[in-house]
Image (cartoon, rainbow, N blue to C red; front, side, top):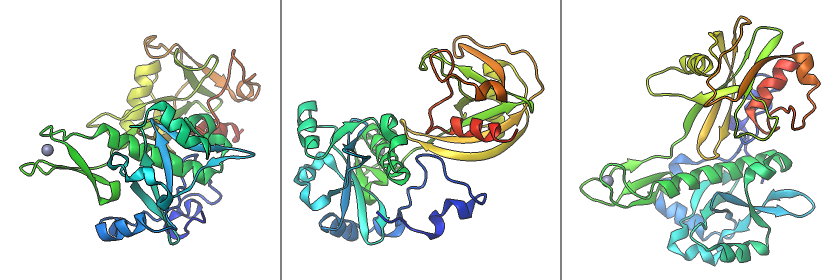
Length: 320
Ligand SMILES: [Zn+2]
């Protein structure tokens, strides 16, 4: 896949030299006007140039040969997609190649494995995302997130009737003619923030995380608050600190299952923390020297390389 220029050029939209976070940079023309045209979409589904990526129960089909990568299948060769349950969704255009995603979650495990065997394996993208070409990882994340939303919205939240996919998978429409509600794909905003006093930053850990892992604080935005307010509230709830000077850094699609992480930095005077042990197992202030010397083992490690948390920490570390 070649990608598009123009509006998809992250460096041109943000700071010079800025490289987007992992799972951003899909670089497909989402073709909003064309995807509303059912005739055009149907023609793309029978076009031998069109490609499809497959998802089974939140796992993407991954090639695990010499290099880990996405598997692009020719949509016209995928007779399994004739099964109405698989309903391909249109992700976008790469030049004149239409790219679709299809969900095979209705297949039993053995059937899914048989289907995958020729091409690769169905795997959790989080296990291989950092190892594959960035853009292809972003496309697989987009596919996973959009298909997850479809599986969770088969019934209308207003009247309870069945919904059907429309606009090539970018809306679900209620089949009850008396209702007809349209439901659009959801992304849940979460704030994630590096809190620092200049020389030290705040990292915490949750019990459910891998042993030793410490990360920035984060939490979901609630109805009726701005992003800055969400940052301040989460920091206060988790560690009892009052932040000032909340500034936006960058964002990351995190469709595991359905979030977008909005990355911030906030300053705070050095103070002891008090933390709610239900949510946070521990939290502390760390100097740059301490983080540079991280043993990256079960006693202490930084968050995963593909996370915006790691990006926020590394950008701060680079400023000494
Ligand atoms: Zn309805």
